[in-house]
Image 1 (cartoon, rainbow, N blue to C red):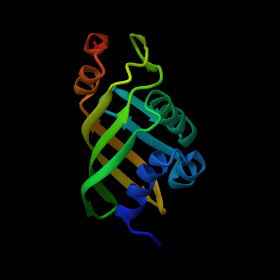
Image 2 (cartoon, rainbow, N blue to C red):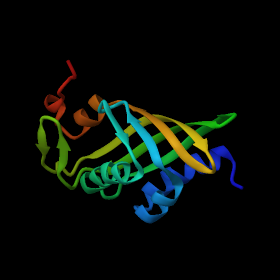
Image 3 (cartoon, rainbow, N blue to C red):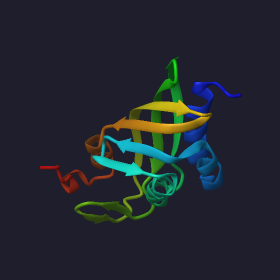
Length: 145
C-alpha cells in the first residue's frame, strides 16, 4: 500500500498529466476539495475533477512541482509551485477572463487527508490575487461577503 505522501502527490501528478481517470481512482468518491484561493468547497470526485478540468482549460500546460512534503498520521502537507500559461478562458464568479497568453508562477500548499488508500479531503491554499495580477486581470477579484 502506498504511503500518505505518495497518495497525496498522486492526485497532483494526475492533474499534471491531465489524466482524469487516474484522478478519479485516487480521490475518494465522497472527497471534499476546499479551494481556499477561490473560496470554493467542492464535494464528490466528479465535481472536483470538473473544477480541475476548468483550471486545465484555462492553463492547459499547468503543472505543479513539489518543493517539500511532510506527513503526520493520515495527513500529508505538500508545498507546491504552480506554473503554466493562460491560453484558455478562465471562469470566475465575476465572469470569464479571456486568454492573456501570460505565464503564471504561484506558490501553494495542499493539506491532504488520506483514508482507505484514497485522498479523502484536501485544502488547497494559493494566492489568487497574485495569479490574477500575473495574467493582467487583478480587477476580476470578487470577494465573498
